[in-house]
Length: 490
Ligand code: HEM
Ligand code: HJJ
Image 1: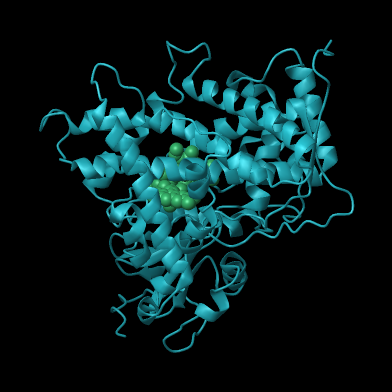
Image 2 (image 1 turned 90 degrees about the vertical axis):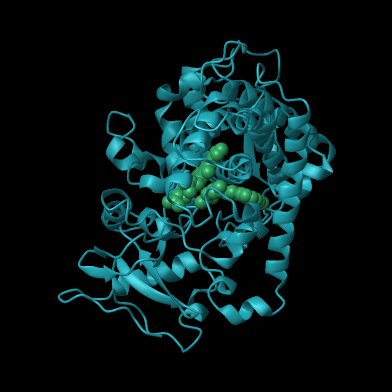
């Protein structure tokens, strides 16, 4: 392969020597986040590895990542054209398609505004402060009842299966105006596939980098295609139903609002013309991102409170002192619970369940930290490395929410801003605010009423399984009990 000419005075980024054809793929196949963190200690914040025949730039270090994604944001805002991404939303995904020009910009704006209208915007029709609060409160309350009932009836159960349906119901309410029961097979078969989706969509799947693998049968790739087919069919059916009952005077949810945009006449809004398909498919990304990420975050939170009873006790003391037991938590309580906030940040940092951002790509030839980077270079951003960097964190492998609190017990802004979970810059997560609000309200509602523990003597394996969003292995060892009997609150 011919390397592009490197301008004088500039170097190519350093990196490990790889095998012919395979490159470094054998070292990176398992626990890619750990392997690339180890390599970054030797080669630095800007290094180049080869996955198959393709060069991949790997960025580590908070300052380097800020420099690339924020200060040189335009240069690094692209997405690589990876073969597996063609299966996501028929290649029309807002997040995974290679487009980063005017069309992407217009779609991102549409997504943000539709999402806002049906989540955090003040709602005149709701008794809560906004629709998001209404949906989360309702689903969290159902979940409390469900958990207690499962403890009575089943003894052993996989709590994450119920968590993911409740979280999916929140984003379903906003996107589709629908809710599903916990045993709804159609929804369950979709939301239980997060692992298989993330295994391929997470950075570094070999089939995306070694062309010959695309012609060999692969179980993971067949599953991935199948997930995307079913996912698209599920959304498509709901969209068709919405078209049938659409009334532009009565926009019910995000899908209606996107349909409304399709029906605007040419030139009514912006200068870019979007196809109907590109508008409607936005809802696929919102729905997919909306359940997988938040459910995974909550799943880690509940595991940490079960593993660290002292941490759980401190959260519950804070809840008792600030909110009491007479009323349920609300979104407006968020500024008043610093320990709980610190716990959520420590969950993001310690689990780093989104180890890499979605892969980026350079939109033009550029220079980073003195290294020459050609146009269209695939870029992995290692969030896990930043969150476990010994130069940024004292004892990074310890789970300690206190690290985010000042001596006065307030949340430290500088410490909080070192946690990388939502990416940075032009491509940063557009659901960040909603994700954080949702996690806060689910968690406080659950912990106000329930005590989480693990059955004594049972070993749990909390090793994160590598993927776009990392999960721990299926765990049926949770034990849940009510904190105080109903009617006995004083
Ligand atoms: C992108 C994390 C929740 C929608 C991303 C990215 C990350 C991320 C790391 C990639 C950034 C990059 O490539 O540089 C998370 C985490 C969440 C969360 C940790 C929750 C705890 C959500 C929610 C939604 C959402 C609730 C929508 C309802 C999106 C979309 C993108 C994205 C559409 C693609 C943005 C683009 O490519 O322009 N998220 N996310 N996310 N997220 Fe989230
Ligand atoms: C999915 C799980 C899916 C999509 C999208 C179209 C937009 C976690 C990070 C960012 C979130 C980025 C987005 C994810 C969209 C999923 C997710 C699943 C089908 C999808 C870094 O997620 O099982 O199926 O189709």
